[in-house]
Amino acid sequence: MKKGFYTIIAAQFVSSLADNALLIAAIALLTEIRSPAWITPLLQIFFTISYVLLAPFVGAFADALQKRHVMFISNALKACGCLLMIGGVHPMIAYGVVGFGAAAYSPAKYGILTELLPADRLVAANAWLESATVLSTIVGTMLGGALISTYASRFVQHMHWPLIHSAADLAMLAVMITYAIAAALNVGIPDTGARYPNRLAEPGELVGEFVRCFNVLWADRLAQIALWVTTLMWGGAVTLQLLVLKWADANLGLSLSKAAVMQGVAGLGIAIGAAAAAAWIPLRASLKVLPVGLITGAVAVAMAFYNKNLFPPGAGLRVGELFAPAYIIFAYPLMVLLGALSGFFIVPMNAILQHRGATLLTAGHSIAVQNFNQNLAVLLMLGAYAILLTAKMPVQWIIAVFGVFITGMMWLAQRRSAANAHKVDMRALIEE
Image 1 (cartoon, one colour):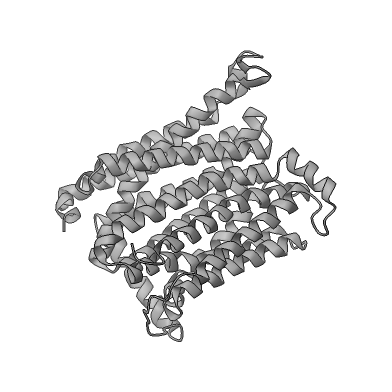
Image 2 (cartoon, one colour):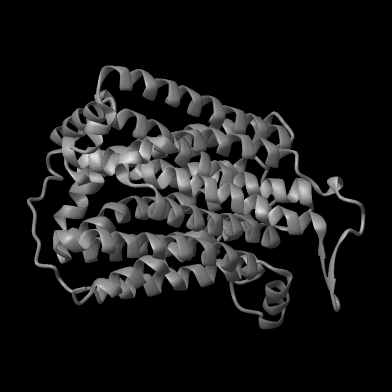
């Protein structure tokens, strides 16, 4: 790999680690100010809305500057969002600032690889990038949980720092420093020498081009299936991220810091599933994983009704002074299973979409349309989640509704795929 590649990977790991720790820290801040439950999904909505509104423009912004500078600006904006939260700005507003920075970061991190490396190294480079992202998701989530634990609270009480009055404030400070480290790493990335025309002065043309690309992907009989299910699963994954925290509290009686470990375990499952799919599912056989989407929805429904009352009081495993309740021990494999099914399903579908998108359009335009659809699904699903919380629906039934919806939509996707296969040779489209 060329000089600077591993700096890019390190910067992505650190930035993504901070992203995942930040969510836990921001939810802890909401808990401190006694925000109603429906505010939590709005936190993610404010983060995601920039991805949707700026979708036609972020690619042009990433091309207008050196991509290392775009990544630096993005991480600096994220750090500013953390500083706003420490300074007392409502987490929902400050999280929106972080989302603004994150929206610009995505096209830059992928685009810089194509500038730095030859085409025959891109598959290996993307494997490095995605592996770093998955690992940072697991570590970042668990780090966020550790930073808001009772141990962190005791540490803060002894330190008497200005502006840092709680474990949540300490967590936010740590996340801000982590973003600053990521920004410093971005500065260390060498100049790739790539320069592009500045198209930011042509917003009308950018929107028109985006709409054309949007229509091309949805009209293609292969791309529409991959776009359908990846959009659904992405929206579902982000919503489930919040639902797992709520479920761990309501069904297992876990604090936020311990519930974050459940998120990390699900992330481990995603890594296992993704690795299995990469090893066992060739591109030409990718559509065969569609039934896994149905199973994923069914497991989510089963998860809804898993709780500590299914086990006798006191059941568990004791090692010396340590005791692990049975309901916690068996919850871990359930989270791994849910994550593994999701990872095994989404990797082949992403591969189809990236391949078909690059064939019909360009990789950049395809990713922009995919990001728009996925984040629009996030907004809609989180909005529905907020409404159900406002209606005071129990979390078990929210998860059940969510699981049934995923299962139903996956069934429709299978039906549509079968209907399309009668009209065109889907395998031939994959192999184009």
